[in-house]
Image (cartoon, rainbow, N blue to C red):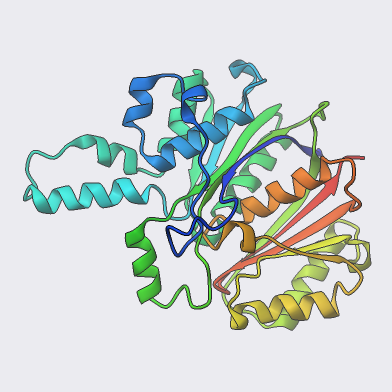
Length: 318
């Protein structure tokens, strides 16, 4: 099967809790040097600037004509723009509405903006599949490369706003959980380059609530499909978020399936959000790209509120 290489990575995420909010807010860069068009930059909302800047950073060394596809993912989309548009509808009594917030609230805005800025006239797709949005984008990216594409830009973006945070709290979705946000992009390639970080081996997804035994069975089947056993996994990366009920399955799998593997978490750094698994891939790829990394094979298991489950297998570049 055609290998898929992670040739470049970029991320905008929270470094440490800011203290200003009860959630992890992304540490944003100076966008002036990345998005040089001042007029366009002023029109962009915060999440669009995050996503566009992250995507541009990921392909800054590659001519635009060599990008064969842009595939993005988001769980909740441009929340601030959506809120702004809905508030304007109420305030203006559904008359004389500014179309800009509506245009920028659509889920495919970030992928489209990257394509327009770089003049990339290629396949452009956005996936909005709740807690499996990023995994869907990765699967599509892998299929595109295995069908002949040379380079695919894949990424995930989600933001949190004060209103969305309050709503999630009222719905009981953040009990003992620290919410977060972030943008992660990956340049996936058919061939390795000097900057190649790792190889993306495979992805598996499933939905609904499952017992630990059922999830263990799916992990065994997934690893067997790639000629691996649990003993060959060096890093077991889990999406522990602080909620004891949701974290129990991770603890059980660590002790029963992967007692010898190094146990790593990531939501303590980026927070909980629908596409947080993209931060896990970024974290593993970054570590694999560093010479002092000891691991060779990493398995990422994440579930979003025990409903959307994903397995992502990554191998260090040989």
